[in-house]
Structures are given as structure tokens and as C-alpha cells.
Length: 285
Image: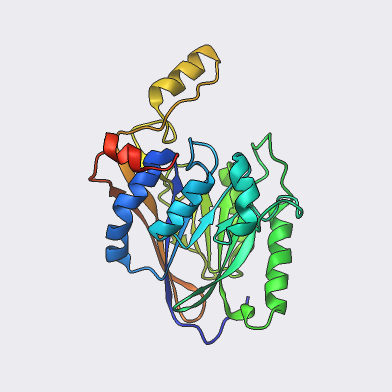
């Protein structure tokens, strides 16, 4: 990837939003995160935002109104029928680029920010997703980067990759493969914030998993008692999201005028507001 004539840009990436309580958490904490980091561009993974699995249209629109510039998804991209039909009208939401080309929506997009262009690419891992069969993310990344290079003006854009994958080895391998070819590669899906935020040898910001936005005193952001019952009985539990220990997790990235990463740090910001009945009523189901 060739870079020139860029100014530095600050990107805020919020870890996977889980359930409407995660949406509540984002609403409560995003103003403070903006004050702390003054980001030029905000990205949030919302693969579990609606009912803990997928994203509904109302949440997609609501997150945009709250100030999320780009929503990324994962294996649950098509779990909600209304969102599946809405993708063509929702240019700020991306589904994985390595799902079938004919699927609704787009897997990557050029966003214009006050500091210049940012290209976000959404990729899905191949390990442990039995219900979804994605193409090879390595080859799809090559294809997209080649297309970017051929488009006038886009060759100078910053490229951020959300790699929504289950296996740590797959995430680390793609990070190595993309080193120096993209500005940042952020892992999602595990919903557990990792401590390995780093700048790679060739100047790519990377973290294995950006955590979650929602309940931390839970199982993956969902009600822990229901999850225990599920494991004890083998009966699927359609539980609600956890309400204890709400916090926003994610990472903050600074990309220099060379297109290479200059700084990355993870963050945990507790939500001081409590989920009550009025707050619940204000959330979009």
C-alpha cells in the first residue's frame, strides 16, 4: 500500500456491542470517549447488538445517530431479516467481504473524514463458524487491496481491517500477512479484550481482540444464569443481556501522515449510568 499527502488521523474502535444493554453502554460512554480521544472516525462492531445475535434495522439507525461512523459485522450479519433487506440502504454498515459476492450489502467501503479517506474492510474467519462458509480471507484481502490500488485517489487512503474470527492463530496469521499493507487490523468476535495492542514491524496497528461493549460480569455479555442452565441441560436458552458491570471496551489508534500507525492503546471505560426501566424503554428492540 502506497501512502502520500496524508495528515494524521485518530480512529476510535469499539469492541463488539452486545444486546441493547451494550447499546445503552455505548450511548452513555461515547461522549466521554470523544472527549478523551477526540477521534476523527468512529467504528463499532455490532454483530451481537440486537438480542445478543445480529443487528436489527432500528439499532443500525440508532447507532448511526449516536455518532458511529461505520458499523462492522461478523457471522451474524444476516441473522435479522429486516437488516438483511436493509443493507443496500445502509452504507455505514458492512457485512464480511468474504461472504458470497451476491449477498446483500458491501464488505468494504471508502469513508470520507475531515482528515482524509479511510477504507474499512470487514473480513470473517474460517475457523469454528459451522453455519457460515466464508471464502479465504487472505485471498479476499489481496483482491480488495489490488482494487484499491487501481482506483485514482484511493491508493492514498488509510486501510483499517476488522477481522471477525474465532481462532487466535488465524487472527495472528492474517496480521502477519497484512503487516505493512494496511494501517490497522483489529480482531473481534471473542468479546474478550486482549492485552497485545501493538504496532507491528512494518507499521500496522494490531490487537487480537477489541473486547466488548456491554456487561462484563456476564458470559459474553449475556445473562450468566441462563448460560449456566444451557450448559447443564443442553437446552438452548434465549436469554437477555447482562446488566452488571457495564463498560465500553475497544482501542484507540493514531495513524501518521506516512500511513503507518504511530500509536495504539486498548481502553476500558465503566458505564456510570444504570440500566433502569426508563432507560430500557428508550432502547430500540
